[in-house]
Length: 250
Length: 352
Image (cartoon, rainbow over all chains, first blue to last red; front, side, top):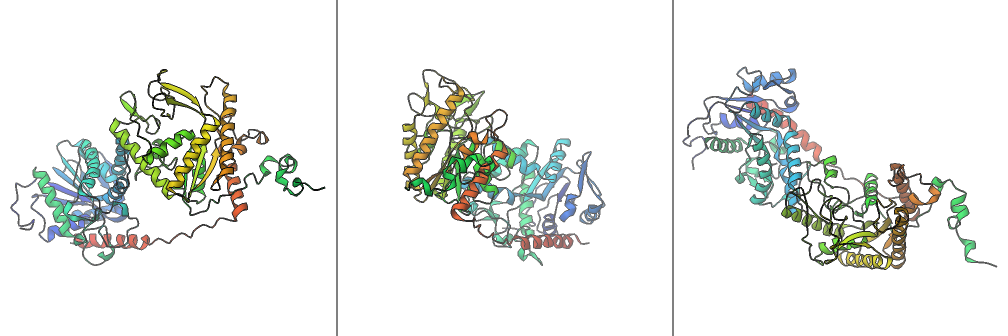
């Protein structure tokens, strides 16, 4: 099977901005390694990592970095785009961006797998709280609302990597969850996001093991990553972008 | 000439136990026979006042066990709106012994699940807990699934707990004349339609309540032989009575009956105890000082005094509580390492 980079691509997508936090590093690494599918002639990265990611303001359809984040944005973008307007690109892919599926999917699976039940009203509340509790999601909402022709996709940060590091909280009851059970919970998120004009891009099923973990084959690589269950490898990012490419191509 | 009263402690005499004391100095109201120890899972159910007990136990580091916790991301206020975290399972208030018995029998398959549902403005309500979901359920299927989850939680609670605190609340209730099913509230008050040919008023008598509670204890013992039961009687007067009496005398009839049942259960069962929160709030000695101006709701200070008695009398009987040592978490190192990694990754990826 050819690698994503070797696959014959369909027509290129319009301009794309990948917006995010430290997770976009794996996308950049995948790009540099030639692992990404051909997506567009005009791809830009925009974002910040660590505490600087909190230093974004949103005004008039534009994301503005405060002083502490500006330098980092400049480094990540590298093309001098100091602010990010909602109509500057034809498509936006919010990647990671502090919306962590590991904070939502495992506890919900644990509830359901212990015989629990969430009514539609409760589901609506918990999903809204999870999504809208993140500034990045609220920015995505505004982009989609203000710029109807623009494609807005959000790829939440994936599940933690099995056997890597010491996660602060784990959900043993969620282990062993089936694809169907995951799909049920992810479907709640998809439905609410769709109402906001946002498509959610979830991690591929083939990257999930033991019900609620990312396969260690996709663990972050490089120095210092031995204890990092959060970030993933460039190969993982390539899979995500391949899915994104397919999604956009329809 | 000697007699049994000669050797009794001061608390046995009205003069030394009550009259000579400031009401807030009265002590030893509970000769606890059951230990409620830290680390032992405690479950609570019953009428409104049981909520206070569960909350106070949890606040003092005791292990109040929530068998049907709010899902993640449903935080405190919203969770309370949906009746999570109020009792150990999402039944809402269980006012009568019969209602408790129904819930337990349903949970253990000893009673067919009633398939009666109330509707109001296109929403569906569970007649066994009509206030559980604000605005009702969107369908019968949803209501049925939600109740099934609560029955699972009841089983988990009963089989996990070391102590079951149950607050007896009322004797008055409404039931279906054909099926005998007892409702949580009178049909038509919060939802449903009242049908005088179908809905019958019951004011349970002492013998019936005692029989129901004996059946409750037998079922609990069968499912968890080590489970101890701590009874209380709610000091909250009736909101309204359908008995034809004045609500004040109806309240006395109701509470006195429940109090008598509780006493007999304690006398007959070594694993059953009674904590006198009812007396602490209602007795004339306390001059109604723990009631809000409507003479019905109990003010927080009253709950505080009740719980002070609870813990003092536990300590008098069993010594100071021994709290298990908290285990040290290991998450900090991982979190810090992750942050470091995060920054290094970005610097490497976007270095130019």
